[in-house]
Amino acid sequence: EIVLTQSPGTLSLSPGERATLSCRASQSVSSNYLAWYQQKPGQAPRLLIYGASSRATGIPERFSGSGSGTDFTLTISRLEPEDFAVYYCQQYGSSPLTFGGGTKVEI
Amino acid sequence: QVQLVESGGGVVQPGRSLRLSCAASGFTFSTYAMHWVRQAPGKGLEWVAFISYDETTKYYADSVKGRFTISRDNSKNTLYLQMNSQRAEDTAVYYCARDPSQSGSYYFQYWGQGTLVTVSS
Image 1: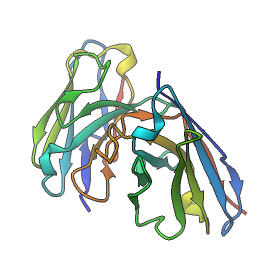
Image 2: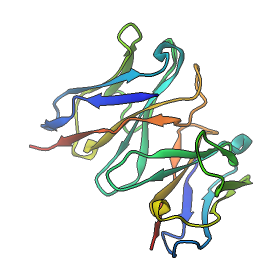
Image 3: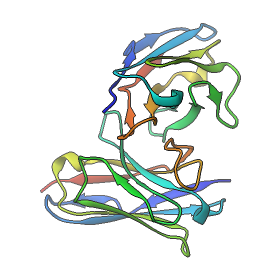
């Protein structure tokens, strides 16, 4: 099983700042099959990024994904008030499908 | 627009059974693979089960294998999760989620709002 470790656990930033979230895999993620999700309190997760760097439909350009192998990054170029949430990475390159523990982006 | 609406959650005693449903609309349900994903209170996300568009392929997390069964009725645009021999650690919000493809790309393109299952005596 691939274990995903997200860091930091909590990121305290202000609107307009840049956010950099890390997701590290215990072994190489096949074909960079890595997705990112955003979850706000009381809501379902929302797909942001798939294939490590492809934005999902309707996702603003300020969200970008990068990385390969075992190290992946989600960057939010300029934080908007609605971006304060928890972010999860997920690998789908091997079974079982696994998620990271999440990074909370707070004001 | 894609809509997924879960139902069937509630309080169930340990060892008992519960069946969850997920009603799909806004897309051709019969042409997409589907998943169940759960989230224990205050915790992270855990994938539970996968089913291909035609039910020929099913996968389960080890934590539920042999106890949970995923199925679908394409004539009713509905996904199911039969949960037997429930344990306290099954307490979670259960989400249904649509895969981007028929046979599985294995990430979660759209999500329902979830239904809470509480296993308690």
